[in-house]
Length: 304
Image 1 (tube, rainbow, N blue to C red):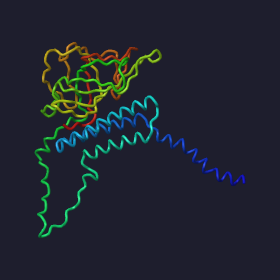
Image 2: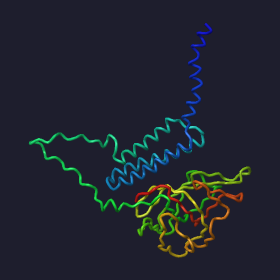
Image 3: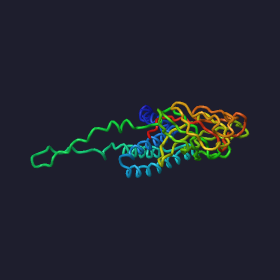
């Protein structure tokens, strides 16, 4: 009987030992939340492309995506506070974002067509196939190339001692962005930023940190989703008169020079690392006053 009991208990023991590993494989991390955020950016790009074909449907999908973006923020905050997140809750948001992308691209079951019946002498004339794409229109497609750097002047101040994750702020482009002789982004365009992470200074941790990213660029009455990270912070107390229409190359940011009033070079007391994380080097809070110029690197192409 002892041998029989051991044989019967073995599968139960194996299953019990497998549970921790299985549970560990379904743990949601910050990287998973970032993946959701990346999918939101991609969905916004798909919707912007849809606007030229079906503006009404694009508006409907954008409203739906805005709600999903709020849910992603909720999941990020919930994970940070509770340190756990149900896989089903994550998967639901992930699936709905992908659903928006599918509809924006016009793929999936909703766009499938049934082949028409063979034409007969009594049937209506067959529909002619659509004409090929207009090469002139296709060649006029514009985009901000990946790796482009823009200089933007902050409209508000940021400080790691008071900033919170998901706080939003705005900045404006300093000069025109010119690529191949064409102005892609005019001076004065509004860049929307968000505080991705922040670690204020404490008695035990005197190295404060703050990461800011940019997710939207607005000009000409339209908003374009972007992924921008900070590569440099330059002191600037304000603008000297009107902004000149100087051009910036596609691979490097605009040269600030004497455009910004009170320029002293890089902001003292901060060091910018990978992913746009700004760290204090003098045991103080990371402080970016109003008028600070941030050099922003566009991480992926932005169709215009």
